[in-house]
Length: 245
Image (cartoon, rainbow, N blue to C red; front, side, top):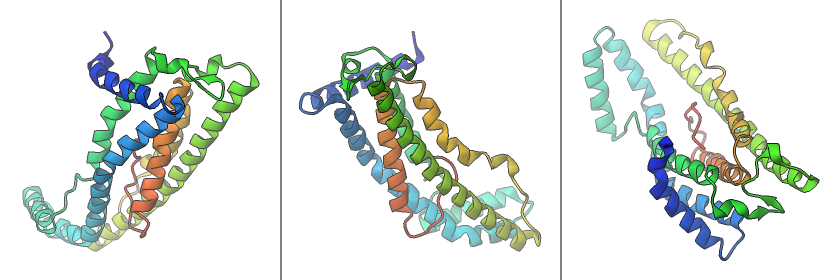
């Protein structure tokens, strides 16, 4: 039995909702609408994460001072940091919550679109939603895949640029904090330079799943890019890590 079988009750519910929507709109559009509704429900968590990131950026100088003050005393440092976050009503883990909540949803959608079901028999501009790119034939099917992959690649580039800028800001802040705490530059972290390139991983993943899953990936990736642009429109530092699609 597949490890994903534990998700079958949720998969069944997702299937029923998408199937109900597909009674009034095309199935591909039903997938888009269902994804948007779920991401809209998760939006308050993303807003909380953004507030947490902004709070951490605001507290960065005080955190650097605590690191200097309690250098070599990790227990005292942890207690002081906990007290600081408590006073400011912030959390160092706020940014992790949206990602953790999205993981089950991503897993349910993956299971739904990689397990044979009636939804995959519907089409998008003539291309079956259960079709893999390796099995495509005819100009029409290739055009559908090409448009979806082009959209995912464009979003990957946008996320790549944002991740590079966020990484550069965090590196500059880390260097500044290290200088104030130790009187010298912070250590370089060249091993993390590859992380922004993972923004293009969605394109590669889309090549391994049916067309329906690629529609989902394009929808949720578009939401993520737009959501981050809105939440960090004031120029506040973003998390350098990748957001789960």
